[in-house]
Length: 348
Ligand code: XIL
Image 1 (cartoon, protein in one colour):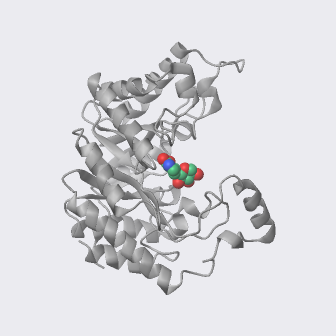
Image 2 (cartoon, protein in one colour):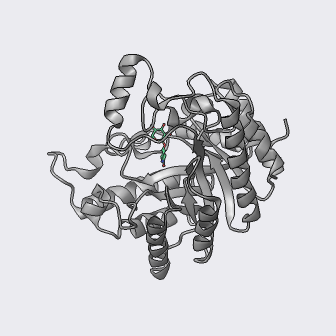
């Protein structure tokens, strides 16, 4: 098959790698990664809990492999994620006795973590998600230990530390649902604020966890414009399109448990046996529309990264409900190129 990266020379074409792919245990995935992609992101192996599971004890074996693999393949290598409320061990925010850490302690830990991790791959990892998901849906800062302990300037501090550790690396603010007006407005205020303080920000990462009916192409387009107007670039950093019905908020644990007991979350999992052709075609059309947009806006949109190589890799099989069978990517459960893959090639 023709390659995605060759079809879109104006974009870095990316995918995220899990441990099987990094360690070469997934030959089928490895082949797809080499042939189709010019950029890679680490799904979990550079998150705080992986990179520094215990105080001062860093673990870089998987990350070293990941970076070596990207270099062998000649790919642009992304780092994800330095400062986030999730997948960060509890000790980061606590003293040895369990009491909350002070602002100074947490800032020192943040600085040490960023300097150590970014510094190790200086000149090799080309761009970092420095701060991930700091905003709430209403555009205000998310209540997290980072905000509670350090205060709102934790974001600027993280970018400063990253810039010190690698002044050449691209530095990203990354978040989801920035297509929603209130959250987007919050992100625009945040970036403007950083720029006013002279903090270097290269691009905003739109995660791109899309649904079949959200966001509209127009909303995606105006979101790209909102950040272009600030003089920053945009990257689509975690693209997938959830084909399953929305889960009613609030009852996910209950449905997960019931589904596990029954062997299937069937009530919200209609495509356990595969996607009907109508859904294949609808997904293909939706992907083609997004790629048509990303290609047209490639003066601003510099990278499009899928969150997973093939459907069997996707985190959406377990989120927000465990045990779902989703089909959100271009390659299917057996690694086969789907109608969506051919539609993306055609949209080039
Ligand atoms: C997800 C991974 O894909 C899962 O394997 C893990 O269990 C949870 O995190 N936003 C992000 C990503 O920034 O790091 C998340 O990745 C998906 C949502």
